[in-house]
Structure formats: C-alpha cells, structure tokens
Image (cartoon, rainbow, N blue to C red; front, side):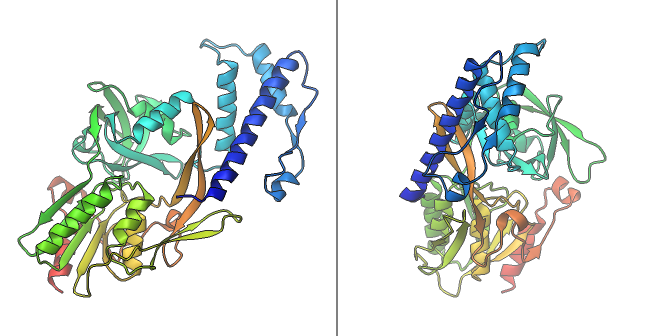
Length: 411
C-alpha cells in the first residue's frame, strides 16, 4: 500500500523514538539523586524533515523532575509500575497529546490483544467500537453475535464497562475490557437517543466469527448483496456474488453496507472497480505535506452497462471502507444512497514497530471522496434519508430496505 520512500521515513521516525527512549533511561539511572545533567534534547537526526530538525530544543527538565518525584515520594495501595511501564505510559501520553483517537501506542499486552482482534476470530461480544465526540460509541454490532442478539445498536454510547466509567478511555482499552473468555459476562451501561436514562446490558461473551457476505434473489426481481466487512476474502466473495447477480438476468441491485465497519482499502477499490471504467477515482488519500495526495483508481473491471439500477444502503454503522465504496458509487452516478448518514471514519493508520513487542498505530493520511469531501469531517450523506423508529425496530420492519425496493421497482 505504501511506497518505499514512506517506509524509509517511518523507519527513521521509529529509530528516533528508540533513541529518545534510551535517553530517558540513561538520564534516569545516571541522575537519580539529582536532575540529569542534560535536560534539553535537540533533534540531531539529519534525515528528519528540515522544519523539525531546525526547531527549538525541547526542554525535558519538567519530565525528569516528575519522574524523580514519583520514584522518591509516590505511595500507592496498588503495585507501583516498573520503570519500563512508566516509559510505556509516557509514550501513551505523548500520543494522547495529539488529540487523535486513532493514533495509539500499544505496549506488549495491548499489542497482543490488537493483533488478535484483527485476525478475524476472537472471544468477546461481537461489535465494532470507536470514538465519537470523545465517547466510546458502537459503530456496529456484527450479525448473530452476543452484542447483536442482546439488542446493541449502531450509535449506542458506552458510558461504563463493568461499572468502570469510559470517559477519557481510549478505544483499545475499552476493547480489552469488553473482550474476555467465552461464557463470562460483561455489563455495559448504554445511552441511546430516545433513552430517558442509561440502561445496563448484560452480555455473555462467546467465540466471534466475523461474517462476510450474504445474497438474496428476491421474487420481485431485485438482487440483494449484504456485505458485513471488507476482509481479505471479501473481493473474491463479492465477485462470486456479482456472478450470481449476472446469471440471474436481473438489472436491479441493492448493496447493503449497513453496519459494515470497513476493513481493507484494497477490498473497497477492487469492489468499486466492477462498476467504474479504468482510471476513475475511487478515493483520494490526503497525506502530509511531504507525501501529498495519492489517488486510488478503478482497475476497470466494469462489466455493467447503463441498464444497471443500483442502490446502496448505509447507516451510522457504515464506516471506513464502506464509506469509501459508497462515496465513489454515489459521486460517479452509479448508485443512489438510501438510509442514514455514515459514521465518518475517514483516516488511514499504519502500524509501526517501535520495539519487537510494542507498536505505534499512527494516522498518516485522511480519506476524501472523488469530489474531495472529507469522510472524517462529514461522513457520507444519503440521497434519500430513512431513519427507522423504535417501533420499526420492535416490529422487525426495515423502512430503508422498503424504500430502496420501492425506488427500484418504480424505475
């Protein structure tokens, strides 16, 4: 996904961080009884960008004073963190200072949990969460999981996890608390628009298998593809679903991306390529000033002619790659969007190794639709807004699907 130059730049930055980590240790052990002799650390790496290398020196004296006071005076009922754990905490504080919920440092234990989370099978409740307005928020519960069956909805705000408040909690910490062994119970205090007060949801954890795709060849002549995630296997499964659609001799297609939290960019680009001529923009990646903008274009598989009638269903659980695909199909006039405004997760993260067992997940770019709309700032607005009511949900109705069917049948 990234060029060789970008890899070199990231490696240089990682090396710089490791050197500063060594300075932390050297300064502490050398000057435990007095402030370190070297209290100002300049950036000496000539490979770093000139605007950073030429900046004023950074004053580390306050850091060392706090370090020494904690080591010499702090008393706690709990076990005091080791020096290494305090360094991990300092780096976590550094990333938190950016104010970006998606840039996160993973010490060894958190990194292990993160890697397990992206491998596709884990034990937990089965929902994707993120930060919205500094609150832990459900992006989407996965179909037929404990969270889904317990009634958790996209947009639910998680105020407490087992009586622990989630204010100022990073997403990865919330994930580690919600996950757990199969058969154990986690209690989530949930606030939802329409609730008079928060409600507790007790959910029994289970082994979670992330679903990918379902299809339906409806009697009314409409073919439906329900895509649950943009996994590594999704492009092949999507191609097979499109083959079934073509063989059905139908010309009306509904792509349901509701509750799809996203996944691989490459999967979204590949899927969009079935509908767009070669070279058409699917998404723009706005990076740093040095990196500039990259454009991801259709591979030109486009097999459909002007007879195709298509609607994409979205809601506030459609995020990341879902927003990329929906935005491209909408802005190129391939499909109408029906449903609710999407989640608005339009940033790109890369996992950078800092040590053999610790990594930094850092935001390196932001997604823009083909017309330049920021997905992070605005999300994707549907052409036809349909918001289900509590009564609809209780009665098992699907007004967005009904509206999509109505539009297609009227064409």
